[in-house]
Amino acid sequence: MKHNLLVSSFLFSATLFSSTAIQAASQEAATVAPLHEESYAVDSFYYLPPPPKEGDAAFENDKAAYHNGFKMKGSERWRQAAVDADLSRANQAAVWSDALGVKISEAETPATWKMLGEILVVGDYASNRAKQHYMRTRPFVVFKNPTCQPDDEAALRKNGSYPSGHTTFGTITALVLSQAKPERAQELMKKGYDFGQSRVICGAHWQSDVDAGRYVGATEYARLATVPEFNKQMEQVKAELHQ
Image 1: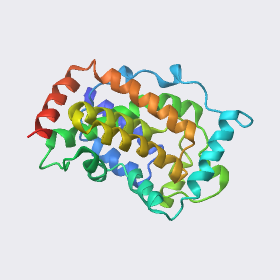
Image 2 (image 1 turned 90 degrees about the vertical axis):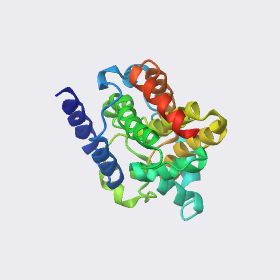
Image 3 (image 1 turned 45 degrees about the horizontal axis):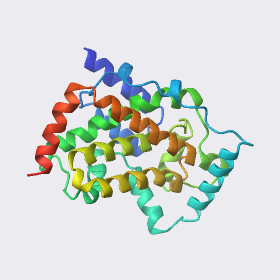
Image 4 (image 1 turned 90 degrees about the horizontal axis):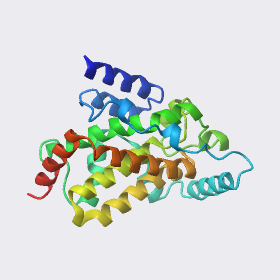
């Protein structure tokens, strides 16, 4: 019963911003038992400062970062940002495989595949409180320009921009996979950084959203270290990635 309630809570929050990619990811997450309850996540609203406002120096930096990202429209980097945006587990398995140096798949690396789904759920838990409180308007709405994922825009307009949930997920993923396969840490952490920047390039998030998402992701990673089930599964992930 508790698991059903947790899944229902996750699906409810996910429907607030159910783009095609995120909706697919939330459907997959419904089959995953969360590593911890939502209440065990550190409250991001408590520890994050408010997002920058018009007139703040940090907001000027946000606007400059947006314009620099939009200049990449149509480039290979823009296309990679569009690929990174799709949070479905099959896509994320492909996104992280090169940096990991191992092909992630349900058949070949089932523990790692399972972990990706679980990270998606707890990443949502970790970012939700601040995201729902601030309901920050996204940059593509402010500048009236397309994102790298036009099909997602109607849903993203209804969801807060701060902190970046994608970046939270990407940061946790980079840290977890680096712990599991430390010899690939430099490649994985670079991918994690680029994954966050993809959100700025895409026009879906401000730079300060991404910076905050990195902190939320690091905080959740530290929280996971206190979860016995996570540590148990981490040993399984390590074993299969070193076969």
